[in-house]
Length: 225
Image (cartoon, rainbow, N blue to C red; front, side, top):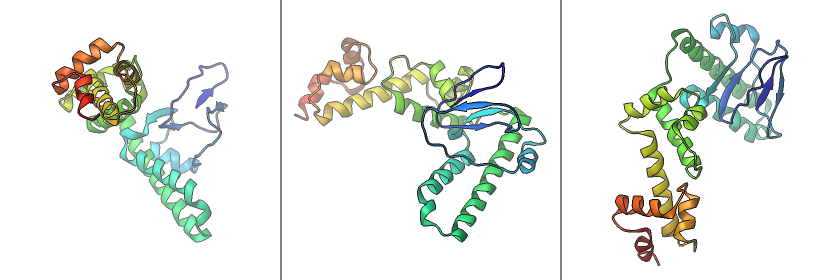
């Protein structure tokens, strides 16, 4: 989703974000997909939840448990609305309103306290992003930090908190996926599998694979042929 204010910057927001703006301010939006799912909250209640001020914000939903609940509730309503009667829909919408306001209260407290995201939630969000993008060659700590909505330093601290490093995690995910592809017998060559899993050359992939699993990729394949 992109937004543009009169005479201002034009930021692009990736998917999986909670985006909140004051609808009374001039703003133009454009989406990369044609379908929108959104909730409109009573302005007074939203302001109260935020603590009297509604800042423009963009947050990764996966780092906030209530954010995940709101997102999933909205997605479920989108899928099941036609199967609900008026009373059931009203109850479901009331539940969504309650969850959304609780989410705003949680965010408001975080803004006032300037708390960093929970390191465990941030670590899990980063791992989900790595699993979804392991085949991207330039999957760097900077790119991952941008995707989950934090600074690189904050992301490093989250991984350290969980006794892990960012690039070791990227490497391990790539190796695990390459092993699955080799075992699946897809008919692709080892070098193609290495490329598809984000490794830039087959030689370095082979060395890393042997170090991790004790044998070369080709020997590993022979076990499943």
